[in-house]
Image (tube, rainbow, N blue to C red; front, side, top):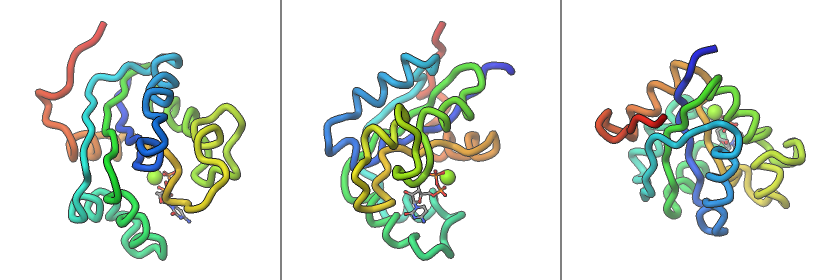
Amino acid sequence: MATQRTFSIIKPDAVKKGVLGQIADRFEQNGLKIVAMKMIQMSQAQAEEFYAEHKERPFFGELVDFMTSGPCVVQVLEGENAILKNRELMGATNPNNADAGTIRHDFCLPVEDLSANAVHGSDGEEAAAREISFFFNSDELVTRV
Ligand code: CDP
Ligand code: MG
């Protein structure tokens, strides 16, 4: 497996809890290098377009409201098998089902709101490419050795 890039968000709940550094540390300690990173306040239009695949799902409105409720950190992670590695570090979508040691287990319990599950991560190569370019220009990505 060659080096891959994936897109990640540290969601507003994690920023609010003051654990963004601890979450970034998980990536760095597990072979994922941060090659782009910025804190943003997502607009409603951005959140709706970013999560367009979930438009018909009953949780869509709440998810958009939550993602625009406070600052989040968007980033690009690079490493061997980065897409799957990041998904493993994140844990299951519902933190109640996430294994101990995963980000969602360690930073999201008890669960009050399924939108508030600390992180987003691309679920495949196509999504990674789309999501990276949704939030970053190519000149915002650095080369790291
Ligand atoms: O984020 P992930 O790829 O694990 O899950 P998803 O199925 O792509 O859903 C996107 C986001 O919608 C999740 O991270 C949850 O925050 C939220 N969601 C929700 O609020 N209720 C659900 N039943 C499923 C997902
Ligand atoms: Mg997803």
